[in-house]
Image 1 (cartoon, one colour):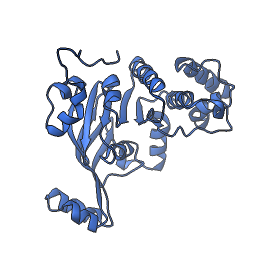
Image 2 (cartoon, rainbow, N blue to C red):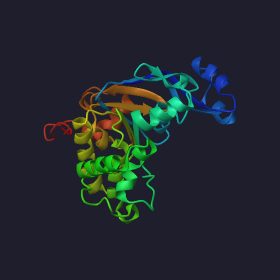
Image 3 (cartoon, rainbow, N blue to C red):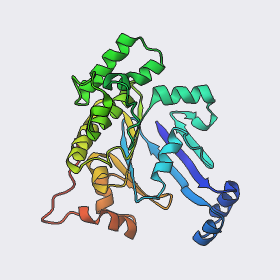
Image 4 (spheres, one colour):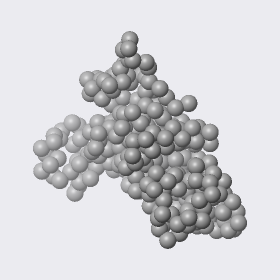
Amino acid sequence: MITLKEVWKIFSPDPQATLSAARQDDIDGKTLKQQSATIAVRNVDLAVTPGELLCVMGLSGCGKSTLIRLVNRLLTPTSGQVLIGDSDIGRLNTAQLRRLRSQDIGMVFQSHGLIGHLSVRDNVALPLEIQRIPRHQREDRADELLQRTGLGGLGDRNVSSLSGGMQQRVGLARALAADPGILLMDEPFSALDPLIRRELQDEFGRLSRDLGKTTLFITHDVEEAFRIADRVALMRAGRIVQLGKPQELVDAPADDYVARFVEPYRTTPEQPPLRMVQ
């Protein structure tokens, strides 16, 4: 359902000139700095299959958050194609893009983006209100999702009165409100306390699979990726350096960088294999 084909994203006063030089390996870090240019995503090919939960992980600045913003066209590629199904989203007009974001894609980011003066229920139902769904239908849908995300009975509470973990649950419920086929998650749990974070990771992994969502999940946390992902893509300097199941990265790292990244998770006689969320 999500396909990236030879995608580049370059921030530069002259991105096409930087792209041409980069394709010929004729530009180095010093030159990029002199030109105030950044190659955030570098010739990425990636396919997320229907119903798959794919984590993109890497250190800060590797390009992973830029990558996810290309999928909903918050950013436009310098070169290459991003497809949802068979549709090249770069060719969508404003109305088509708005419909894609409101109906086909649910987005959850690190900052909750909730509306403080609205109730929990009204925050969850907001995407349906935008679609002009009748009030009783959107409230019923909101209450159903609040129950599924562990917030049953809290619909009338003011969202600003909730803890950070509970607010993130509201954000997840809101992303699911329109029943999108795709979820985009950009480090949604990174600001939470460790115990709450692990609880939400496990719950989200199960919920995503139960609902059959195609999910692109961004994280800098190896443990988080390995807990929830069907496959993991490790990025470095805008490139995907290895893509595979979590255990494959541990057992057969593509290079020394990947090996160092996954070293704490290598299996030893005293250490069991990775535990994944089922």
